[in-house]
View: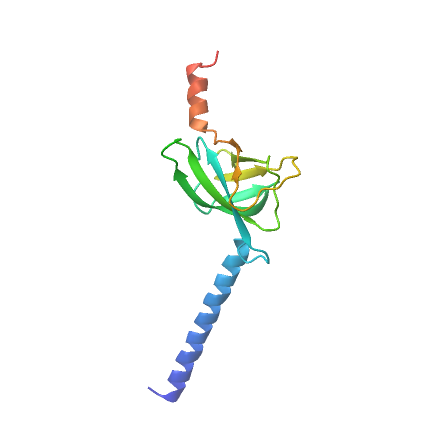
Length: 150
């Protein structure tokens, strides 16, 4: 191997490392993880968390303000306990509501936050009491087809 080949390999390796670093920075920015402030965590319990998993968007007025960090079944209440991480600059009143919404008929689910009117704000570790579970399109179609509710 000549000196020219070693230099060329080193330059190519450096370019690969730079591209990988740029990709990681881009992914961090697009996921909202690199914002100036930190994150704080809230909990919400849903009867059905269908379509929600770790990484699912949390939105307020259609704008992503956080993401789901954990979804577990509470063995005592049989409710889906969901932890969400919100940007520090988003302060929610303690009577706010969390609901599971869909992006459309075939779209994915996300957690939609609706702020309340209380003057007291939720702090890290608090629970959002008012929740609205996911609506199953299949269940609605079965009820409609069978004539239930008439």
